[in-house]
Image (cartoon, rainbow, N blue to C red):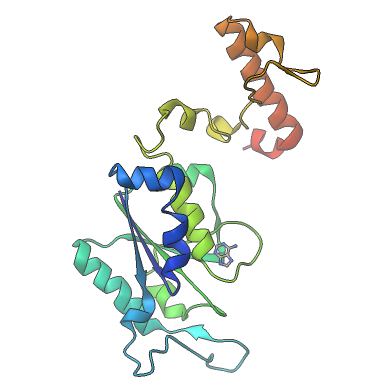
Length: 226
Ligand code: ADE
């Protein structure tokens, strides 16, 4: 898989996506992640990428030309038209189901907005999908792009060392994950549930299924009705 991030602040994403699991997945060749600076594509002689809104109003709007040329250059370089996702609070809220679907695509591009938004013609003409990471407003799409890249890459086969762990995630089968414990078996009198120490794997699996269900019912009952 290849992920391209179109942004005015490439360092914000590069730094985050170099670390830990995602960094190792990139080193192993599970995924290629590149950042493109939209400003590199402006034709404005002062390097501007934004302007004030037609019709008046506060704030600045990212212009169509640098974004369009940035995306077209990506298409030329890759010989394909990546699925272009615009990160915006007006998009559909990201779910694990959508993450799984996105992880099956060969090429995705993540477009990060800034300021008061982007010229609507970008959305009308080249954006394939708008995604929000929740009902709140960020200063720009970069952190949202990192969240999408992180959640998508970690379920690409081979990206996580322990393949099984991606399958026992929260939201798999619309259930939260059961509680987990590690050594010591007792700390300040706080004990790990006996069943986990029993060695009886059928009983352990039954306990985990039940805990996952009870936890979901208590914390996220909405998931059980989907
Ligand atoms: N850009 C600003 N706020 C955002 C959000 N909640 N989700 C995705 N992109 C955003």
